[in-house]
Image 1 (cartoon, rainbow, N blue to C red):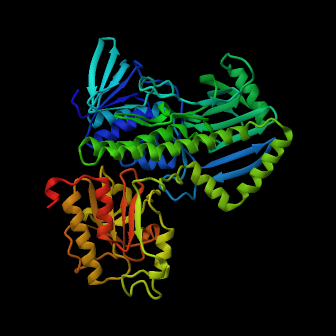
Image 2: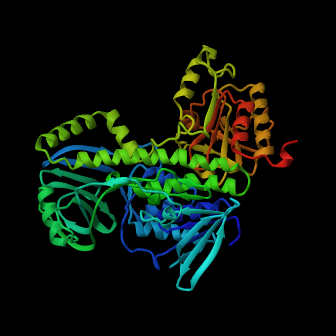
Length: 565
């Protein structure tokens, strides 16, 4: 195994996503899984909007959407009465829905993409021992398969091998947490009833919880609190419980998967130990409420891949990988708290507590601002790394802003300063937007289509067309292009359809003809945004400041020797 190879252990959604991203970033990835074949079970069935945005640059988002079912609403019933309805339709994303797709289909799409990128999934291969090298430049791993044992040395190992992770155990990390006392049961079945197949419908009742997720091919995933016992539920058990809890006549048939399980909430204290890292269920497990589990693993992989690629190729210091823990551990911790609370509220047994829950839920979700926040949170569009050590910004006080027209001069007006302050800040999601003539192509495009394996630098001209401003943007663009071309794609953004004659820059110019970029990024006045490959704002500045930007870049990247002169 070549020394710069990353050994990815586990070919579930997290491992497949990581393997694809590593190959896309130019690394060697060896992907193994102890199972001899992919699981045919539907397992995790929800892919949220933020995950689809992350999957788009990989080229698989449209394939997943074509195979899945786009669900636009959520309904909650309490003791037979409709408590609330929430819609995903108004989400600010290309994917304003919850995508329902069996995990086996998600894995099939990702596996095909991994192979198309040149990878090969090695099945029936498991880790039996793991030890980090004494010289701290590799990991010694013993693999076992039908062909015998194999001793390999990898530059990095990432454990994506699930809740019972062998990698986690080999590096001596505990998996602290608790299990809920109440058991649950699930079913992948067909249901004949009067509940629409266009909404996730949850029923709270005195006899327990029933969460019903529509699936492709007119199937349903039913998750319910279970009666005492150890045996998996039967079709009849599911039908009786569903009738009782929904208050509706129904017939359950064609079960593909019936299971009984306990909900655990666990998380490792560290996502990284030297050259070994953990992602997905190997690092955190929690309640299935909200369908966040697989999505969190996919986004663990998306966060880790670009950092690992930069470090492994010598373009960034090893310390960059510490930010994987600092960013993703907090996300996982918050998710455990939120899903734990939601599960306990959903399974309340006290009649008084249930009435109060239904009343409070109905009132709060009737408020548009609360409903919008709830939907955005469920879609994972509110996740951020505001407190990350590798994000930043450079701005001036509002006292330095001026009163007047935005187009008069480069110094921002009070209005332009305020718009920038309210736009996505460091560590927040980078929203998609329409652009024209990207990379010299004619016609319309979108910002996400410009994302490759590199960071993306947007230099906004703003509304003031001044020679001084054009010179400053060109100087910054040329400096970044000269030093960081292999890790940063530079684009100058101008309003209107014409390329400014005074702009001395031979690289890409994006024409913000309809003002979509300006609106979404608060760019009425000159500014810049550095977007990370995982679609978060890494750095921003108003006005565009070369020294501040290069200072930030020098903290993240290593300069090539030729660039130091």
